[in-house]
Image (cartoon, rainbow, N blue to C red; front, side, top):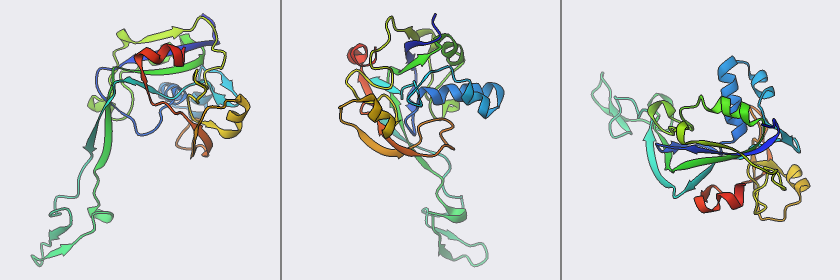
Amino acid sequence: MSADSHFLIRLALVTPLILTHRTTLDAILAGLIFAEGGDLEHAIAEVPLRRQEGVWCASSIFLQSPVLADELITGSSVRPQAVDAAMFRTKTTGRYVNVDPSGGDFRNRQTLMRAHATPAAYFMGQGDLDAVRRLMTAMTGIGKRRASGFGQIDMDRSEFIALDYPRPQGVLMLSDGTPSRPIPVEAWARLRSLAPVQRAIVRFEPPYNLTEPAECVLPMHHQIDAGRVNSLLM
């Protein structure tokens, strides 16, 4: 198989997944390589994908419709001494005093997350599909709270599909002309799409918690009906 193929990945999901940002394929691969060796520079250098216009040829995640979302509250709440999340009784005086649950020792540590129940998640990419498959088949889950059972993947039903012909618009753009991932506006202008886009200041390359944000165009699609996968992604 060519080490420079256009491909589509379909991850079959068996439990709802929690996403706190627009997960990209390059972020997943860099994280898997880092987990193997513990060297961040090596992990980024060894991502088995091509670049176009200085951007990794790797899409954001697309969830297969129908997607059912449910809000979850995770983490610990205020300390046990707190009463009604805003008052507690001191041991020395027996009196109630006000406390501020927004900060300090008595801050509320609960986090609101959203779990998405979906049959599958899709990614597009360009690069060494064999290397991508080797890395990703070691995955058991995707997204946040994987250790708690969220975002579990059935690899036996997942697919890594090499496309027979290169996509004429590349993998940074869907077939309708919209971006497949966050792309700096200067790079997007060189791709010459006239499709409507949204813009925001975001990070667009790994390590996503350290790199400098830039003004980027953002994907317009977050969910894709199974019947439109071929027309948009292949």
